[in-house]
Image (cartoon, rainbow, N blue to C red; front, side):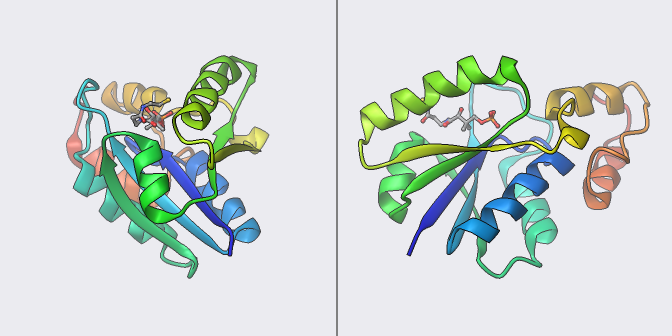
Length: 160
Ligand code: PNS
């Protein structure tokens, strides 16, 4: 049984994230989506809010589980027996950072490999940071995020 781990900040989840997880769920027996807490990064949604949103957004996929983790990603991969870390690649500019993380993770835990799913070009310009910036300034982000996320952003009002 092939198990994939899809980690991320998901602050908040975007249409691009959902697309990558949906496609991963077609290729792997089991997909573990994990909200990874980064204490150094100021977040808009707390970890539990992001988990609740992702559970709602991915509830239609029976082989997908949503969890959270703090600490090293490879420790979660080891604990959960994940074979592969799956990440989305939007553009060439993502490659340098993703390559570095993938190589570090395999150095820390050689049994885990990283595979990339190329983001649908429809969503390639979307990032959680840009979505937050546009929403905080009162822009309409409803085309870029699922409805539940848009409602959560609107609920926050114009906050940074
Ligand atoms: O959605 P993001 O911000 O691109 O996700 C980055 C994430 C959460 C996958 C990365 O920061 C991570 O793995 N953090 C956990 C801590 C860790 O293992 N750091 C070493 C990575 S090489």
